[in-house]
Length: 173
Image 1 (tube, one colour):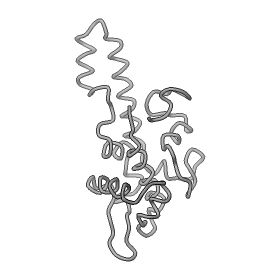
Image 2 (image 1 turned 60 degrees about the vertical axis):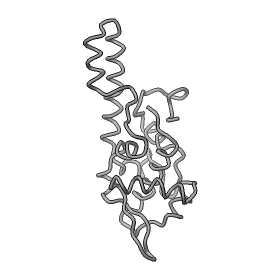
Image 3 (image 1 turned 180 degrees about the horizontal axis):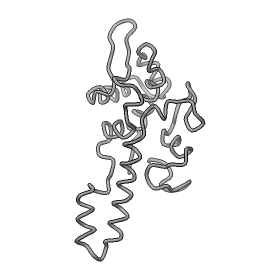
Image 4 (image 1 turned 60 degrees about the horizontal axis):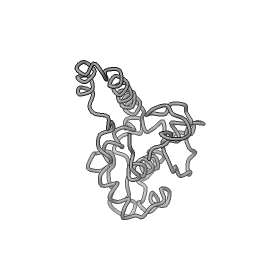
């Protein structure tokens, strides 16, 4: 699975907005400063999230951006799909199931790929943004910038892709 830099920045921005869920809308320059990128690039990311109805813009002096739903109702996988497209670059489940049945020589390999795909989808589609916004030991504290939101998942001991520890495949590239 591949998560682009844009996808990581979208996750960072969503986490920032999730941490200020009950507060006033967050100004774009505040989000940009905490995420560490230009306001223009962040604006494009927030536009993608807005079009997917994950965030909303509030006009006026006290305006900015905020999540449209509670962080507990927004899933990690939704954000990644919005910015990067489909999660599983291994193929869709139905195609892999067909290969498991038809390609007897490589059936076991296709089954492993199907299991990886299902585990990835299952983890990302059951991890709410609130899990990444909280203040438990497995999440970053308020005010900290996350260079790689997947580090949080790794620290919690449940890497969403392969379970590989340090080295190749340990972090989204």
